[in-house]
Length: 537
Image (cartoon, rainbow, N blue to C red; front, side):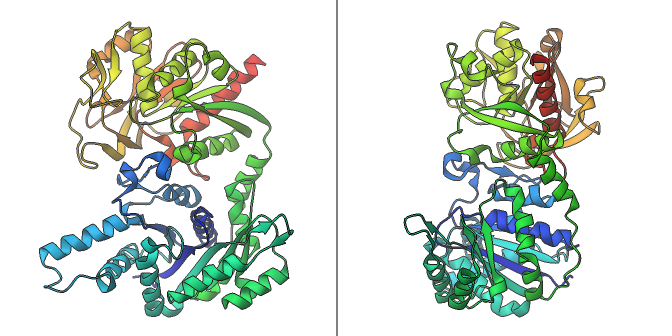
């Protein structure tokens, strides 16, 4: 078993400071120095997982290869590290308490009074150590959700305190905090950071590194003051200034020597770092040779985090194609026959996003129709693919009443179920198809030129499948099933004849796009959008 080191990342003052990005950036830097690293997120909410949360509450629900519905920060971890995460990488209070109560009911505690300490904290520590059980990782980074001082976070901070005591120099704590700039006085203020660290100290945890989120650069006087009042070395006060893209953060953290400070603390060698691939990606991202406009049609567009993985995947594909992707988030509920040209007319590509429920679905149908009839490159993801086949059924096949059971399961069956519960979902997810499933690409299809292999594996999050009895009817009119799950004979991908680029996928390709490996579907979609925009110009 490897002698694994543990790094804990906490946050103070306010939420959404970017603990996930700092954790992912540090992991990327350590990986660049030859270490095997993973990251996990401890979420303090009592939900067992975010699968039932409204996207307005918590952003998108990210799905791992093994079918876990997790926090969106795991998407950042995968995009930065280019390695898969799993159920073990996301732990919630709900899951912790559920496990402890199940053990108590089985009699595992032999009649003991079950308490926060030691039973809940022991379960938290067990989950933290679980990733190291097989000796696979040199370093495990654990991000604690919420902010220090929250009632919900207290058991996690206590578990960190205990692990610091048990592990000694094999553990380190990074505290991310805010250094606000007051415009009226023209000053950076350190007091919020001091109070945040004081709260952490009251809970028995001394941070080793303080990362300061700020709009303005920290001078040496500010760093010195924070170091003095918070009991850390000046080199351990790290500036994290606002940047134009999250992908700059690893470079900024390298320049601030965050990884070197941490490696010294946990007793690992400081090997030479190779970030050439990352820097090449940044160069292409920040120096595009052209641009293209992509419309993302969804019903949660007020909160960008609802479509986080899709937006990041478009950026990856833009960098790959050396173009700037201007993304327009368009609310599907606001689309209608009278404004469709105004809303979609200037776009070079249309992406209809995933979702559940009736609200905004007819707007997605209109967006599909516009893309199909006007030869605009189109990508439909999950419910976006279902909207594509339903629009085709209604307007090309003239199947009146065509609909999807994915939209609203509470209403009576529509006249024609294009999407239905064709086969019982096997394995992961209960009533949902969750996680990675195989898909075989049809030879001779347009899709064959996009994917490097004929048998692919993609991640799912849906309930209903294409009704196979309509496959031949669709094919006769130009829409073909070109990706099939070979184990269960389920339609995964459709493409349209006589259209520059029109593809619908039942799975979520955005979950697998990373900085190092942009997803081929997104890359091809952006390339098609660029090609069509050049034709128009």
